[in-house]
Length: 105
Length: 222
Image (tube, rainbow over all chains, first blue to last red; front, side, top):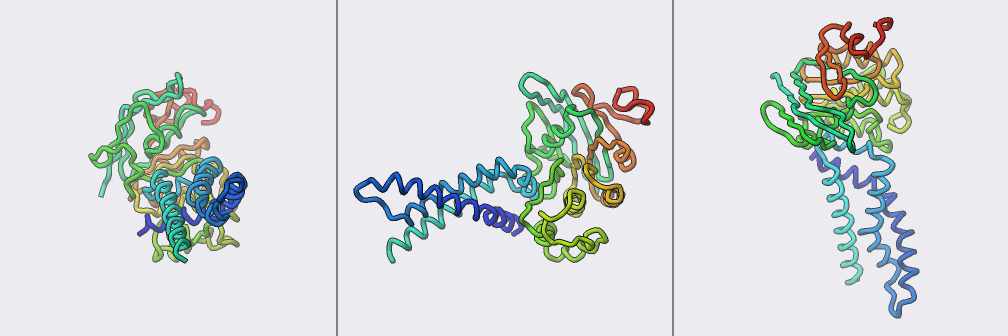
């Protein structure tokens, strides 16, 4: 339970940066796709960015600026790889779920 | 119950520069090993290797007869206090304590004259010394068998240093502690065994005069 709570804490910690950087990323991707004959709607692009780009940017930012905070998790037996995998999986699964819901709504 | 940590045959080099050569160190419950050494001799490097977050060219770590490659991955075997603050800044003190020690321990942990005087509950609002005190107390209160303290007295006021020393002495009965700090007088006060990292190797220090002989401190400062 403690490990789960710590993984959740790490995930929450990435949310603000991840979701806000995804907005920027989604704009860039959307602007490049807009010239296509049938461009995807912005919210779909945003969700896809939230699944991959934003979290990866966030992990990179965390690695560069708050590297020492990983010791908080190491001291409870949690490796960086474990944090990366669970965090990315959560973003991807949530994104997939949203895309499925949007498809049928 | 007494536990035993052994690290043997440690070799670590950065590029072509060999920092640690064939290190052996043993720590038992009740030991407070003061690890001394000049800047850049590899004290922190050795601690990180021992903790498991830094790969060595060669190493052999054993806790209670069991061999570990990365001991930190097994909860409550070993904890490490890095040189710089490691508590996430966005969290509250209570939440941090709860995550580390469990909900029931929070009230007991906070019954502390220093922590009660704090005007804030946010980690980010603590001063450097207060934060260091909190980090050390938190790690000392965990159930880990061994604790590595890298510069615990760095940036801490004399009163808090005294409190930290008391905490270390109190907890050492149930843990093995290895600590290093450039404020060697505090290390000498609190530790019950000493070693010096010199020229890539580790020397056991039985007499403070040896620190002068190995060129760690000038005779005038002994």
